[in-house]
Length: 427
Image (tube, rainbow, N blue to C red; front, side):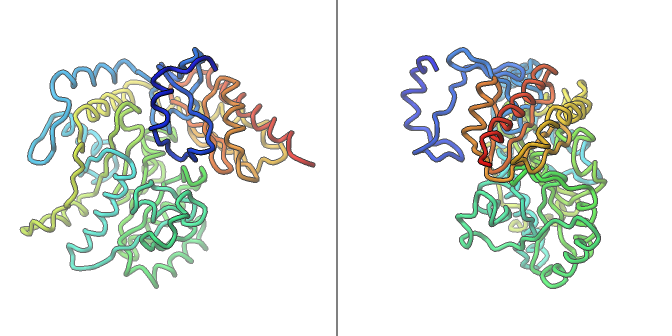
């Protein structure tokens, strides 16, 4: 790499990076600009972004429609608190999200990150029961799950295999089980709920794909079973659609629509603004919302992030929804999935590869041991592709607008990186 920029050299000692052992990690790559699906580095190299900045930049970088909307909003009202005040972008966005989601999921609470959106959902569920005179503070969650890094959301992540296992014993104690994948699994979970359901506020699940916990897929039966069990045991069902929501799976805008299941609460973030600005939403059904209506002010939802409903973020989100309406994002996601299936197929027979799977605009290579993340990432960078492996997973979640040649480059980089690693394994 050529000489690094001054801002990088002077600032790197002060920036604490995410998910990074600061003593041993390689320096990050300085990015000076981005356009479409490509990142331009300080040394002049370009990388195809194969994970769309943690799944958020679904329309690619610097889409002119989103940029224009944010610029217009910046010139009139960048931000105003939603406590006692209102602005057009948040109110229009809430109406549009309500119209897109199924059934009566039509009460939108804004926040500024996915983790906080899930915390708000958990708080809503717990207080829903408190407002009815019942103390039900625990949640049913699932092995392989991931819902964020704040304290309450850590408690509903996988307690053993997840990145928060260090905090096991210090977090809220939740009921963690395997996902029910067939009738026997549903029956077994029903027996668990018969014993513990009275202590639970609800069920928290990533619908159809468990993301950062391992990119594990399940089908619609699992979610339909959870809806049946939630109804039988009077539990609230929370879908964390922060990863899969807004077109990633291709078959519909939201996983709940694909499964034909209406949850009681849905969380959204990441792709909501097209990866432009931080924004998240927790959307509740009429039943949940009405459970907070009372003459007693303490029955209100006492939560209010400073930047909730930020006008710039909401303007970006409205522009992002415009693009979902005017451009063929779902068809693009389906085409990406079909193409990835072929691109990654050569890896299925390699030594050390446990599984290769795709769904919508998600391609996953699972190894039979923890991934040599630096090695695989460096190999992809050498081939002009930015990917960030974790645990035993090398995956791609590209922008839905990725061009055919860029997607082919991502697939080739994954095949070559894993192939070189596989060939280096001892006999």
